[in-house]
Structures are given as C-alpha cells and as structure tokens.
Image (tube, rainbow, N blue to C red; front, side, top):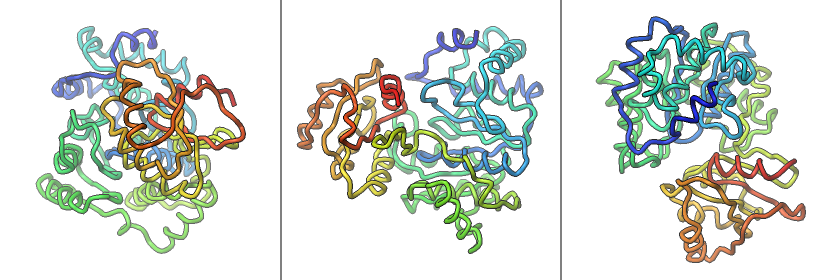
Length: 381
C-alpha cells in the first residue's frame, strides 16, 4: 500500500541529493504525460494562488490538476483533480503504475516529496493544465525538472535558510533559477527581487512580466468582486491577482463566477464561530495575519519548529494576543517547551497549555501545518 510505502520514507532530510530527481526524470520522462505546467515558486501564498488558478481553469471547462504540499489531515489533500481531492483507490492505482515505471533502486531512493511529485504527475495524465507547487525550493526542487509553460512567483522572504541560503539575495536566486520560458513576478517585499529576476531572465532567455502590468481596470474590478463574493481576507487578494494575471497571460477569458469554491482551507479559515486557523509559519505570514485581524484580541494556540523565527513571530502577533496556549505536538522538529516559554516570558506574553476551547473567547490557531493538524484532531466542530 502507498501509505506503508511512504511511511518508510522520512518527511524531512538534513541533506538532499539534488542530482537524483533530474536523473530519474530523464530516464522515465517518456512514460509521463506532458500537460501545460504552471509552476509556483515563492515563500508564502503558493497554495492559495495555485488553488485560485486551478479552480478558475476547471470552472472554465479545462481538465486541471493541482499539486500542493504539505497536507493538514490527509495526504489526498496534496493531489486535487477537477474540483476534488484524489481518492484512496486512485492513489493506490497510480502507485502501482509508478512502481512499474521505476526501478526498485529508484523507488526506494526517491524522497517522500520526489516520489509523490511523480505520483501526482502520472495521475494527471488526462489534464490539459497542471498547477505544480514547489516545496521549499526553486531550481533544486523536485518540481523543477518538468518542462513548464509558465512560472508564477509569489512573495519571496527569508525561510528555510539551511537549504536556500542565509540572505534574501541567496534565497531569491535559488528560487528564481527555476524559471524557464515565461515568468510572472507577483508582489514582492524586497525591491531587489525584481532586479535578481531580471538578471536571471536575461541569462536564460525567459520572458518576464510583472503581475499588475498584465491586469486591466476591468480585471481589477472583477478581482474586487471575486474577493467580496468568496469573503477573501485582504492579505490573500495579492494571490488572487497573481492567479488572474496568469489567466491574462494565457489569454483565457474569465468571469467572477469562475472563482467559486476557490478558497484553500487553512488560510485564515474559520472552523467555528470563534475559531480561525492558519497554517502560516514565518514572520511574513504573521505580519499578514496581524494586518487582517488588528483591532481584536485572540487566544493564540501555538507551537513552532526549531528552525523557525518563533520569537519574531510572537512579537509581531503580540498586539492581537490575549494570551498563548501551547499545543503539544509529538515531532522531533518541534521546539522545546522551555525555549518557547523563555521567548514568551521575554516578550511578557502570558501563556498556559492548550486543553480545550472556551466559547466565550476568540481563538487563532497558528504556527504550522502540524499545529493546525493537531488542533483539528483534538477539537471537534
């Protein structure tokens, strides 16, 4: 079974063999479908941008696949096809097909993410478009080996420094080297990102576009209507703009109605009248949430991985925090409780352990996919 097979592979690696995915792809590429691939790279907003675009294309009558990661509760969330997640039966069938294509050595050596990337592409054999979301990287990411029609770049910020580089210049360069024929650059926090993108595009012969330059006044009006209709929080509107700019590049006409049911769960999603959840896990996400929620106070259900800027994140969110409730997560990558408590004490934020929800208060569940996953497992709406 696929579940047992994947359970033998670690989800995270201290070192990655960047030659393995290209080598395997070169050997098996003739067995894989060749849809028009729209590649998503960046730090924040890849999932929402991808789902906006994939949903619109599907509602416009195209066969569409969307590969995203990680998942919250079930692996099937990573492989979305024509409006719904892949089924367990479809996963098993595709797993068996992929096992026949790969050698035993290839199958065993591929990482969790690399294997599931091939699995998704193989499943998307009937698709006209595939929206393919990079994991943590760019040029060395498992998704970078495929021929892409278009690359979309969401906001790039500092994250995953151990793999991507210590500075924003290093991180942006690593991510942007994934570009091929065409690239649309979304809104950026740092002006130098555009300069780096232009330099790499010139070397590679890539056609580079800035997202808002592709949008007409009619597009801006439609985007406002879509955001209102699907109750979109302001910080996600930039992702919607990037998705619409891709439709404009592809010369595909669309209407407001084509974005119905396009919100991706876990992005400031309301799971009950007094509970919001968000899978964000870095300062950029925290700043976006602060801007969206400023003016109210929330009990923050929180935990963090060791490699995240947890003290900076808590400092950013402090204006909307009533107090923090630390949720227990069984994962070796999770920060020690002592270090988290030290950070909270230094910031003078009161805290306790999460036990249950009091309906008298507003809650924000934030910190990572794992935090939201654990919360949803113990809290029944």
